[in-house]
Figure (cartoon, rainbow, N blue to C red):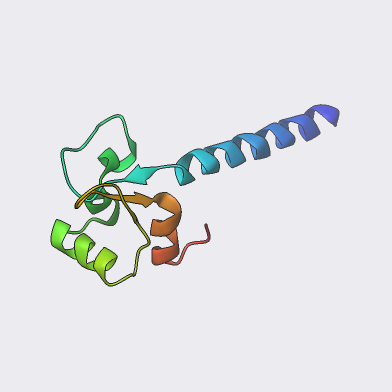
Length: 88
């Protein structure tokens, strides 16, 4: 019985850690895909849309972003999930 409780607690903890890792993902609007990052680090791959559509979503305020220099946008997974209607 104690072993099951410990296994369940570990499973919950690992699930929470995986969720935190996913939420910490940062996407770019354009550039080359980085295979070591989730969805190559590109918003266009995450949303399966064109660069133009992704830019329009940012410009219209549908997805929150941070500017890092001229025309460099950083978008968090949490912002993408809010746009998609998922809890974040």
